[in-house]
Length: 128
Image (cartoon, rainbow, N blue to C red; front, side, top):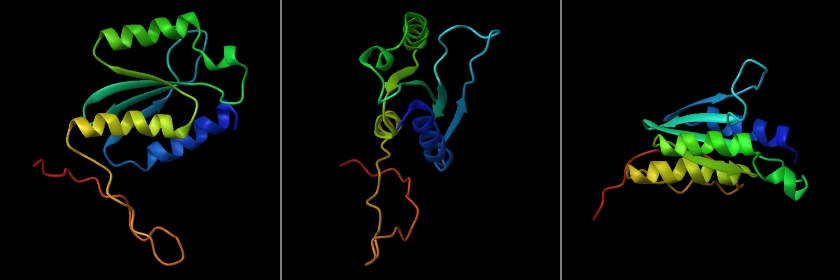
């Protein structure tokens, strides 16, 4: 899977999440260099994700100096940052933020044919 395919998978998953907003950033000459690929707001927490090609060379899987600078600025401002080479890493960032608010994934019900029968419920669990 290349970076474009990863971006499409991440956008599809993010679109289905009821408690977040996201924006796919399309770089251009009139934009600051190094702005992360995805900007998120999860339950009021700002987060940024720089997607990297999981099949690329090791140098393609590391953020550029401009990207690292932008990620550092976001982190210093209180945002959450992540470089991701898989959908699971994007999901991990979102679920880590949700966990801070006591929201954890419910097990997904499965029928006998292995298909999902209900949507994922995003309910806070009571702490004991």
